[in-house]
Image 1 (spheres, rainbow, N blue to C red):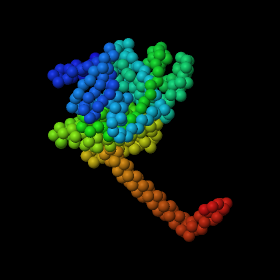
Image 2 (image 1 turned 90 degrees about the vertical axis):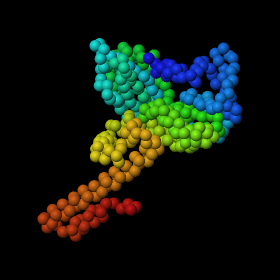
Image 3 (image 1 turned 60 degrees about the vertical axis):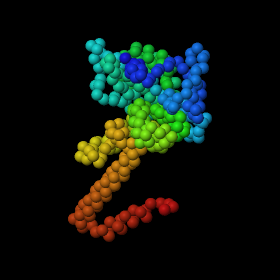
Image 4 (image 1 turned 120 degrees about the horizontal axis):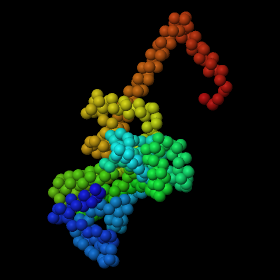
Length: 361
């Protein structure tokens, strides 16, 4: 069953919740708390409330009204990559065709494809890549040549005909990242979720960040005893820094997922992170673990990761110096055994240096 339908059904069980469908927001008055709507019959309806809360998505109508009423900083960034959802169906025996406890990634540096399992034994595959590549695939032959070259192992999983049918009938969709501040207008207006901080999907934190908004607002309402004039500014101040942080993390993670995972140094760092986490679980926590599985605030996750990077850099630099020292001592020992003095090595080095053509040193 659709989760949105389930949520609406659960909400309607509360006596203080009434759902109105096919009502479009026309305007908001954040002085009086009045909101005006127009329904599907063209009738205008006005409602006056204690607090207007916009949970109305990346292209929020409430946010647009707030921008007319206050000095609201706003930043919108489309990335040059789009996405398209494809499908790996269940096997003929109605079983999963891949392991289900993993995020499957096909990283290709400039683009990638991922797959996640569904309850019906299928997988939803999402192809992320530049629009120019999407636009270059004009025929079924183009499509199959592309997949045979870039994702050959996915073709038997999807089925060639299924792949052709879905891809050729679909359109690559854009992805946008939105930052704004503040999230409130006086004590009458508030935006939350994607309306306040839409992000690209590469950290899987969009919905979770919205849930955290609810926790943060609830904490501020408790702290200020439901006084909106104090709780809403406090919420904006504390939540903005974290929302901006997760938007940045989501943008960074796209590079990590499609490109960095192909790097041996990156994979080595991941293994080292996990080893240190195993040894020091309370003091060394990998970035993804902090973000996805703890209540650590997003901006503190970034600060902590930076600190851990500095520690690793110093440790690895120190280890390299020790290694160079050992190599130098070993070299001197060999030279002594062969009767070569340090002065001889120095003279040879100077002769070699002087043999190079003159340059601006």
